[in-house]
Length: 226
Image (cartoon, rainbow, N blue to C red; front, side, top):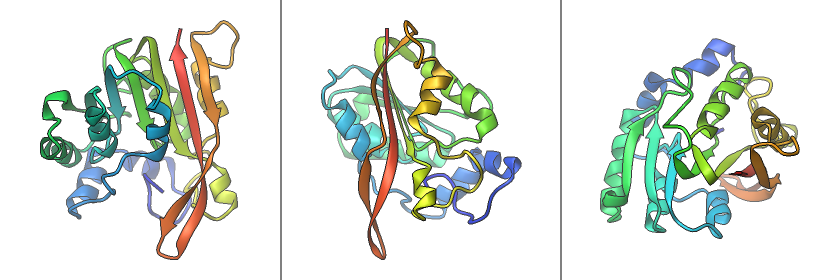
């Protein structure tokens, strides 16, 4: 799992604790690098046909996606709950020569689910941010507020099918989600609503593991604000 590691169904308090600055500062502080530094495959696929503009990367981690976007010409704001992670994003951007197109900021989803101003960014992307079911609507509606008219929201997540196949442990009911939850939460499933559904898919990819390639399924939703 991207967000949690304990192999038991966690309580709501435990799930929320795993979204805090203390949890992630400790996690990042215990290793020189937690993630690969490469951009998320689904992000690369979904922005290929978009014209670079302003982008917000929510829960950016160590900045693989944010730096890649900046290298494609986007002006990026990368936000996360961990200051340790944000310092690594800034360093990565400097090393890749895109520090002038990338800035970082603090974002605590549970304290305030809105990561930025209303209707500000041409692209808002959030990858593998799995929050407890009681917090899902507030967090994802808050994130969606940052999308400008004509802009896109891109959500990528682990699909619940991975629990059935044994590819992942769920850690609690409803933590993973299908595209339909995003559409229903944001009202994108209603005719004449504020969003045009450009992608609502559940593609499969191969994930490398110590035991060899493993087939995993993603939830991918791309919406355009009308």
